[in-house]
Amino acid sequence: MKTCTICFANNKGGSGKSTTCSNIGYFLAASGKKVLLIDGDMQMNLTLSLFPEEEALAFAAGEKNLYAAIRKESDLADCIHSSAYENLDLIPSSTLMSGIEFDLFTKWQREYILKKGLQKIKDSGKYDYILIDAPPTLGGWVMNILAASDQLIIPVEASPWGLFGLSNMFEFLSEVKSVAPDLTVAGIVVTKVDGRKNYFKQTIETLQDLPAHLFETCIHLDSSIEWSQDNSKPVGKYRPSARSSKEYKALTEEVEKICR
Ligand SMILES: Nc1ncnc2c1ncn2[C@@H]1O[C@H](COP(=O)(O)OP(=O)(O)OP(=O)(O)O)[C@@H](O)[C@H]1O
Ligand SMILES: [Mg+2]
Image (cartoon, rainbow, N blue to C red; front, side):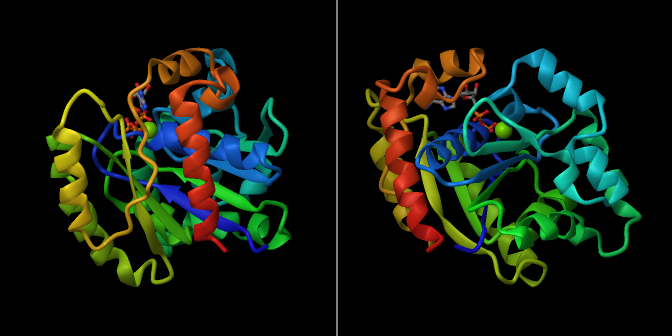
C-alpha cells in the first residue's frame, strides 16, 4: 500500500483535531498499520497525547522536532521518535513553532517545505499512514500541511460556533486548490457531541447540506478523553471500554476505507 497522508484541520479552535488525530493514529497502529504522527501545532497537543510534559518539552528544546527541520528545510526522517506503542511513531512539535509563518516568508516555494521534507519518508514506504495535526489557523503553514496531504479530515464540534467557522475553511480550501490540487476532502467528523442536547440534530442537518462526506461515527463528549490526555495515553489504551474509545475505533475503520 502506498503511504496515505491524512491531515486534520479546521480553523476553529478546540474542535477535536488533535484528539482525533492521536486516537485514529493509535487504532490504526493497533490494527497492525505502520503510522507516523506529525504534530504541526505549537501547542504540542499531539506530542502531549503520547509523551509526558517533560519529554515533550525536551523534544521542543532539542533539534529533533518539526520546527527545527522546517527552518533548516532538512529531511524529516531525522526527527522521528518511537512512541510507547508498537507501529506508532511521532515527529514532535515545538512551542517555538509560533514563529513559523515568519520563517516561511523568505523561503523559495514556501508552500512545499513540508511536502519536500516528507518525500523520502513517503518514498521509503516505511509507513502505511502519515497523520498530520494542523493548528487552528489558515495561512502559509496550514497551506504546507494541505499541500503535503492526500486527504483532509475536518473535525467539527457540535455547537453553533463550531459550524460558524466552517465556511471560512471551505473558502480557504478553494483558494488553495492550485497549491494542493491532489488533496481530497475525505469528510467531516462531528466531535464533542452532548447527547442530552438536541442541538446535535440541527448540526447534522446543517452538515448534510455541505458538499462534503459526513463520517457516520460521531464522537460524544466523554471525560475519559480528558483523563487519557492527562495520562499522556490514547483513550483506546487508557480505557478501552469507554464510549469514546469504541467510537474512535469505529471511526478508524471508516477512515481506513478512504485511502484504498
Ligand atoms: N470527545 C471528547 N470528550 C470530552 N472532551 C473532549 C473530547 N474531544 C476533545 N475534548 C477536549 O476538548 C479540548 C479540545 O480538543 P482538541 O485539543 O483535540 O481540539 P483541537 O481542535 O485540536 O484544538 P486546537 O484548535 O486548540 O488545536 C481538549 O481539552 C480535549 O481534551
Ligand atoms: Mg489541536
